[in-house]
Image (cartoon, rainbow, N blue to C red; front, side, top):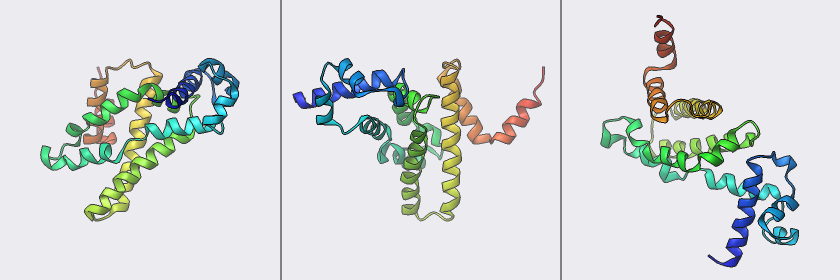
Length: 193
């Protein structure tokens, strides 16, 4: 890695360390450069403003087409159970959970959730159109519904400090998806002591 890359990464990491504990609107270039050990001029050699760093971080967290489409392409190979194919996605979320949790948290970036869902939806819809599936517009709504639910559950899980084991939570997500919210809620509400 060149010295230029090292400096750039140090500035990004300094920004991230501050952003984890402080809202974007309160972060200054001086704070970033002081933390990274550089002067303000060095910052502007690499970035036009603080928002540029945040944009780079967000873009780096958007899953690739292969990561999203790979599990869908595997459906034929495992009998149609999409949950058996999502291990790569789960590994990805675990790997980036520290950044994702900050960005979707109460002090995070509201546009991140929208951008994240839109990018995933676009990737899947491109694949749906390639397959020439009937009623693609309905599939788009299903994708949005599922993404919103998964992100909401992840936010709640983070809010509750991961009190539910992630495997149990994953199984619960699978149950909700397979049985449907209404069926599962009815069953649970009628299951009294």
